[in-house]
Image (cartoon, rainbow, N blue to C red; front, top):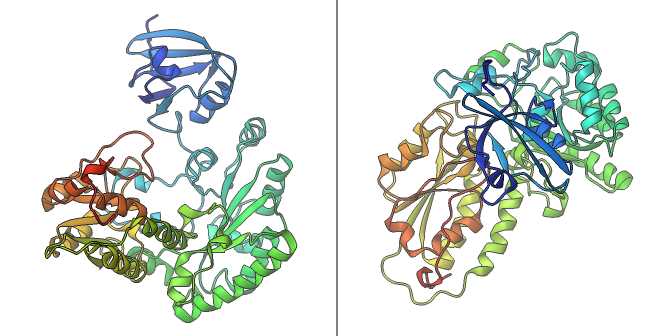
Length: 478
């Protein structure tokens, strides 16, 4: 059958070897337009509609269309990765938040970064936070039919008037009623409050935490995160009445305020429920909560518990380091390029690593010139800043946070590629997420003498490129 109209449906990016998709002959570049006769809107539809024993896929390849039928277990994965989660247009944000980070983006970044999505499907599929201000009756019907749980919801304030002010949206619906409606459907929610000092803190923050916490278990978690102030955003936010900066005394006050709610929720529900961004503890200079505080780290990618997880990971990783033999005169050196916020913590961890292995380490805090110095996390460092810092060191190899790269693991925010950086430096570069991965790298004798091969492909978010080490190549100290 010849296809005469523009192809819709999902573009297949990859097919898992040995999977059902591989067996029926699907290939990258194919479009899957229908499942059992129903048109696909996104990857969620595909997952939902293929959870059957008998499946028919309508597949378009070039100008030809065919229907492929097969049987499977309802829970068996077909083995397809799509180029995009949504096959139709992404729902964009209808709010005008004065603190919107995207509004403060400088020119020249990757084009997708400027898209203000507020699509509940991306909340379910990728963990994006959405405001629920643009849901239609059809959206609510689909949420109930497909039970898209959990959702991640940006609340900011439960007081309706204040929330509308924060969102810049005078018609934003009542968020508590929306959360109650999700609860009636059996859908759970992880919520966030972007805290703007002098605007939605103080009594307003108490109200928000109390009213959200009262809705446990529908509201599974509440994260309180600091407003991200780029150079452009700082200028815009300075005009907001009452808007203050988050300095150490303010951070300590927030830690104390939230701690009281955590105690109350533990007594009431047996869970802390409300969690603070790591930035508050690090800025305040107070100890991090213990690992048990974070439970399953449900809001890890929102900056909740990342530092504690890193510390706990190092405790496990260093147990693998055996007593060191007499050390050679010359040992390799590593430069760790990181954001200014986490640099003191990493300095302590890598000092221990040096003591145990003899590998010389240097933690370099990289100032963010792309967004401004107030943006202090590693994940928002641009390639140009990292390249400049790497050039200034004479280390044998470079370590960089994996979170500074995009989903596919190929580009930084400023469109510099990982391969660009590797080529410019002419020395090994690795992108890691944990101290365990660092230890794995050190197990490879050859890592310090060859470039790292950076592989790009589907579903690589959160992954690093770690060699499978032959025991014969392992350093004697590990």
